[in-house]
Image 1: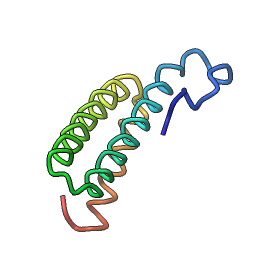
Image 2: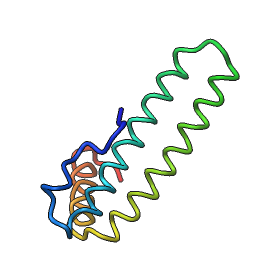
Image 3: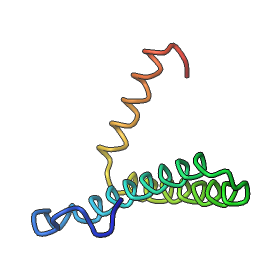
Image 4: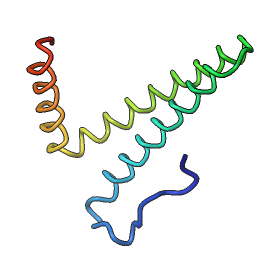
Length: 95
């Protein structure tokens, strides 16, 4: 769980800062999704469960927003994601 940026921005090249901030943002959103879904699984209060899962769903949208921005800024990331997709398809025999 993040309460401050977990990177030392002084050690990152200026041209890399925005990509790194987006990666940290994605990490924070994924952490929040995990937390909310875990809490939803723990509670017996159905109203709270519905709200927690709704908020988790919103965080997934945020991941998509940050990922879209990252893919606009990092062509290597785009290429590596495609490689990963192909590897999974080869390993599983499914598209």
